[in-house]
Image (cartoon, rainbow, N blue to C red):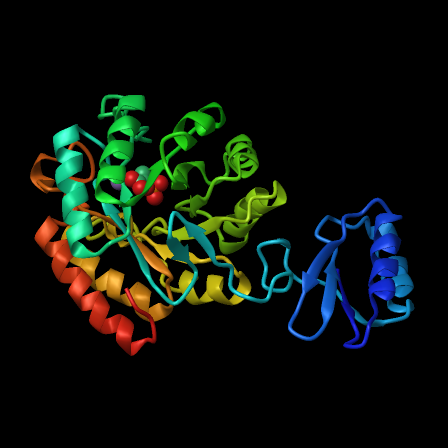
Length: 342
Ligand code: PEP
Ligand code: MN
């Protein structure tokens, strides 16, 4: 429910609405707008008091009207927060007109591999360095990541290259550890609905990129993001990374390009697209990256490995450094057409 105040509402009238909401043990969320203030009630309102409360609030002086929120998610919704969310991570502003490209290998494998990767990422003009240290692998026999040692390497090469860093955290009790090494926590597709992890990442207050689960609906995705905001973390990036495909004969997943304009319409959070996991095949990555930017994405996450054939994970979908360089040039040309810059 959102209480929209009239343009001339006084501070006292606003305060009266807040008190009336809090008197019902509900949270009142101030939503300053361009010319008028609105007050949102993000929590679930017990059905037996909903109608009465709407009438009571609608009758208070200074109230223009009371609107019912149609979506199950609240804080991530544009109904609650009309303007695009922007936030800065070590000088990198997400959600603004500049597109941010996150690039790097699927997994941190060694200091040499990461320093080569960081150089290539920097030279290409990307701003964020990725590298998984705790890897969610389908098979227990696959490379599981270098864990804390990998985080140390990522941090070191990130600082040396002047790049913001991002790495995945898979379990709640590791949020603090991962957060002590990286600038942005990644919550992977498989953990999108790991609720204790969402709570812990929310409480950490650190920037989080939440990836959409391969079978998650848009509502499930946004309700997962709602956990982060509900725990007072508003530095959240939404990442579309492909959903289960009809068949795997050609691609690993199906990149849901629809999700980009849909998420931009219903949510104020920045939207990042990962065409690497979306396709699973490196030669399709550039086309999907361009499509994502044309569709309105605020950034991209691209897997790039100095030597993809030798990669310990996701080599088939990783660009070579020179391919990333070339893609960045194409992205720059496209960005100027769609009113963005890279
Ligand atoms: C990754 O980014 O390497 C990764 C495992 O991604 P996802 O969670 O989207 O599969
Ligand atoms: Mn990967």
